Structure formats: C-alpha cells, structure tokens
Length: 184
Image 1 (cartoon, rainbow, N blue to C red):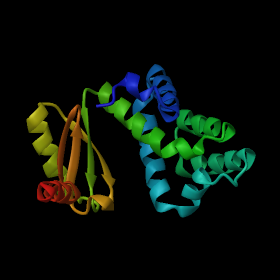
Image 2 (image 1 turned 90 degrees about the horizontal axis):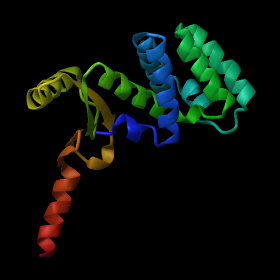
Image 3 (image 1 turned 90 degrees about the vertical axis):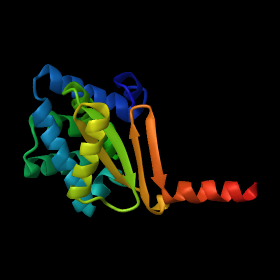
C-alpha cells in the first residue's frame, strides 16, 4: 500500500496531501470527502467537465470561472471549492482524478480503514463489490475500502492489491503464464 510518505512524492500526491491536511486541520474531512465523491461522479458523467479539467486549450482564467460555477452548482464545501480554484490557477486541473483518489486513500487511512486497489475488465456491480469487501475484511481483520478501476486489457478476472500483497486472477496473466510454460 502506498503510505502517506509515498503519496507525497508525486505532484498529485503533494496536492492531495495539502488538501487532506487542510481538511483535517479544519475538521472537515467528511465534508471534503463528500465533495470529492461528487466531483468524481461529475467527472464520469459530464464530458464537458472532464474536458474542462483535461484540456490544455482552456486558459487558467476561463478554467477558474468554469470551476467556480461548477463548484457552486454542485454545492461543494468551501475548502474543496477554494482548492479547485488553486488547481485552476496553477494549471493543474488535469491532476484532479488522481488527487481525488489519493485524498480518499488518506481519509480511509485516517479512519483506520485499509484500501484495496481492485482492477477488473468490466465494472463490478454492488453485490460483487460487497462480496469482495467481505472476503478482504475477513483476510485483514479491518474494514476495507475498495478503489475500483476498469482495465479492459486484463481481458477478464480481477487483480487486487492490498498493502504489499497482490492477487492476480486476470485472464491476461493466466495466458502469459501458459505462453511461458509452452515455450519451455
């Protein structure tokens, strides 16, 4: 698992750490976490917002105005709103998805939860996620937060990273292992 120290080594990690530290100091971790969940959802459902955060063609001033309007429309907390404005001013909005992921990990660590990175070839439904969460909780003895991603290149199956452990039950890995065995 990426520790807080490891998180802080990347650009997105430094921004995530700064946001988390401010939220913790202001006792607003849950408010910021809710706002980030809303932002993650908006990034996934609004091509316009996703484009705003990733396009190098949008100037910093215009991005700031658009982010301010979006934050108001989504009713984001003041800390997250100000943070988004800083990202826009610094031309770092394209870091937002990674920042959201890392702040969620820091918040989970703060609550004493373990985070497992789960990669599947297609999205897992809530029942599958709950079953996986229960299995992992039995394995580690604490609540487990899932950071689920979709990567069609694994072809099928699932890859789970929990701390330093990795469970790779992907079809891609199985096919590569079979190919190596056939080479002799």
